[in-house]
Image (tube, rainbow, N blue to C red; front, side, top):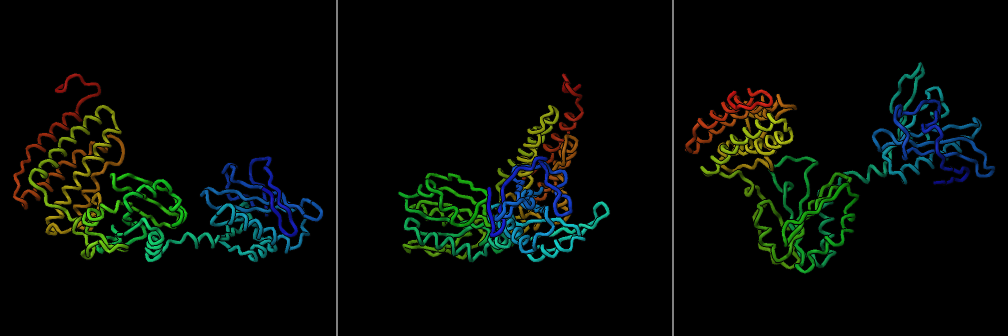
Length: 437
């Protein structure tokens, strides 16, 4: 890719050595980083005479975003305005074409003339360090246009964009917002997603799946997922570069009542036809921990004790994926369910602990929470065995408390039998042929 300025022509070349040239009196920043297709090298020529006056390079750094710029000039008598012209053009190329957030360059601190030129084009001193007895200055220039464009949008802007999107399209008849951004009890942080339900004319429900160009209207994407939820709805989950994540559920208009009454955390933003009845203020009541029946209580404990044996057998067979899968995927969620009931009792069954129990730390004592997090194995079979022998007593303690409060019958005999059986498995030698040895 060749380009030019008023006085200079830049010709794309390949570095014969495969490594950045030593430019500006300082070694490249990426010591040890191999050259790659994102390392760009240009010869610089005077347009009027076609004289080769030097080389300039842009090398992708180890963060795979920033570039290091280096300049080598053969003629020390080149006027400063020409050098500034070279810098300006290469910086513009890197910002506009490569979309890099910043450019770095190194120069000997004794090279006062080059330091002054870097300041003139906008570079700022980042740090100084000593290298092989010489003081080196590291300079940086930021792509403020790119940085500004990727600043996270404010909630009011996101909502306005969604409303404008809906108002422009006649097949979108209503919009509701739901999710954590309406939950006054949820933590406030920049990771909160935006969830909107868009009610579409039934006959056109598939249109937003068939043509997905609309996604880019809300910004530059990182990744997109589309999930069919039912015959009447589907969900687009879209992560944008500025940090905003949109969860857009497209629902057949004929199913709007089922949708709006399925969640207490919901607010109507737009109703073009005026058919949606008034709703209560958004609240988290539909997410409260539910009091378990005795059958549910017993089933959780029974499955927990059973799963302990499944994990022990997988460990004995050297089946780590199965052991970890059952422990992390079945047993720990059961522990979280027990803890949710403990918390529900404390708060009169009017408490939301979040999806997958994400907020239980807020509601548990420091000691109980510390015991809980130490139930997660670190790595290897020894850790799994250690945690298997901890999880039983912990669950038993929580179960006793719940059973007393709910007046449910509970016997410790089952967990005791399982614990003894685990010890028997743990004591078996490899390739045992007799379970009782």
